[in-house]
Image (tube, rainbow, N blue to C red; front, side):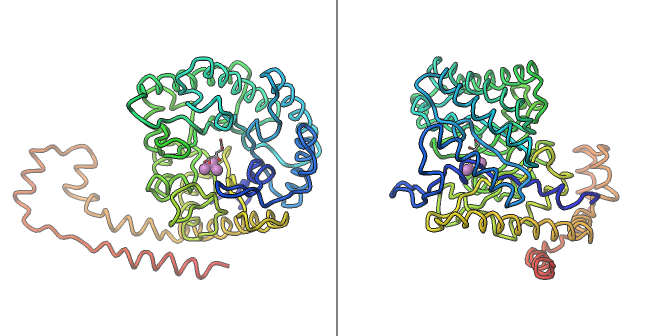
Length: 406
Ligand code: GLO
Ligand code: NI
Ligand code: NI
Ligand code: NI
């Protein structure tokens, strides 16, 4: 594999779930009262920065990620909001000087404020579009300032509720124009990080434009953006789209678009983004298999886009949860590496596609076949032999590997 465990497990702490989350759900108020919650406004923002760096260091996390609105409160005007933000970014920059923690990515929150009720880059209102552009411009400047290794676009409310009042073609064109402007501005200010789009099929809108990996790749290719973006894939978003996490990783990987992951897991019985810490070893192992086959994720990483349950309200639960996620990924990495080393999947594939290695199969792969030669062959060949897929056996092999990991 040629890389150490640390190179593959570039863990990041998400600022929003860890330092601004309080366990609020649609049916109840927050359950978590953190030490920093005795402050308000800019004092709260500063107390959070201080606490966050203590947390990163105690946990030994190499990276963190944040939205602009996680770290600093909005003001009355855009000027005031930006002033708050600049001040906190300067403070974070100071802390980063004496700490080993680095910024995996930052992003702009263009979904919480009511002005974004109809979307940001796909809004029906040009004033909102301009506001969103100003917000991303600022965020890109901060990405440069803090040495972010990536920059993420998650289309918070980029989607629609009804086709009856939505010009989908126009909104997608506008979204592409927005991304092109971001690419141009990043170039202008010398941002060297990787741009990432995070697909999600629904929630908060009924239908999100960046539905899944395949849809997002098609969009990027249609608008000539494919060389400037990769994907940030989230496990829970994959399952919301009716896919497994490893399916999304595979689709991105074979298209050269696998950039980074938001590590979490959903709940099979709940139809929304529950953002649980990832502890399903089966899923994590198959995810790490895709990541290893991708040659790793760098400059991307493994961001815990996950929150402790509202019943786990003690501050130390934040540590237990992150450690559980890290341990799961470490196990997944070890098992996936062993599967690759032992050529388990390679051997299965080799056997499964054997008929394409010789004769007519080899002709097909070499591009030497056509419908006439294939028909000729099929007419002569009256015995088709199929081999069993042995799915249960293959799953059991994976179980044996999981059970024997040290
Ligand atoms: C929401 C997303 C969200 C993004 C983050 C980046 O479902 O997962 O948490 O990862 O906001 O914008
Ligand atoms: Ni996410
Ligand atoms: Ni999510
Ligand atoms: Ni999330």
